[in-house]
Image (cartoon, rainbow, N blue to C red):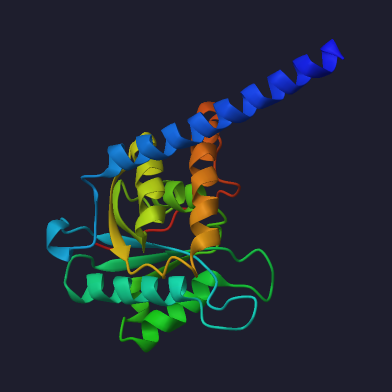
Length: 214
């Protein structure tokens, strides 16, 4: 009985520590990126490249994924404002019938962005992969990340820790009800950032260097 009580105490202690660490991780990332993430284009510096973080074009039920649509809107706004000259679309292409970068490219072209201004990163399986590969594969030491605010904060934080000068341009967010699961997952994704940094996790795939013109 005493052993069981001790095990319960240890279990509850671990839960409490986990909650505190999760809260700390979220606050740490928000504080570190506060001055680098914005919804106002005029507050951003002019950069050569904008990095759009991938997500699926449609939801599992077949409906339009607003996270995707709003990121495309933000990328188009940023390009047409003259803040960026090129766009990297980085996402998952792990199966033959699922291609986030190509979907993003097609939408951008349909919105008037020249194909020659778009570069595809098919190995952006995770946010960390997309952020690091923009530097290691596409040769960019500074750029603007395009996603929703919660995602931008994490991505910019990763970039900072990888020696990249990154800014975040916030796409419109979805309503709280529709985005509840995504925002809940984000809390735990932020704790994993510190795990990845501590263990020096690298992108899953490398590849040949891609030169983006001046």
